[in-house]
Image (cartoon, rainbow, N blue to C red):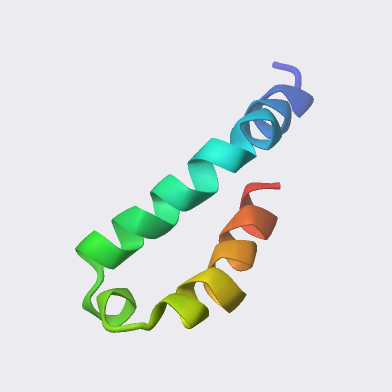
Length: 53
């Protein structure tokens, strides 16, 4: 299998995936549900995007 395919797939979909993943964190993980938007949109969302890359 070409190792670049999963990375390419996730990078191409990054603008749609990261917000959905973060929203799911907020629904499923109590710690994230309690965080204000500036925390979620500040360090959390970029961390999710970096991990997807």
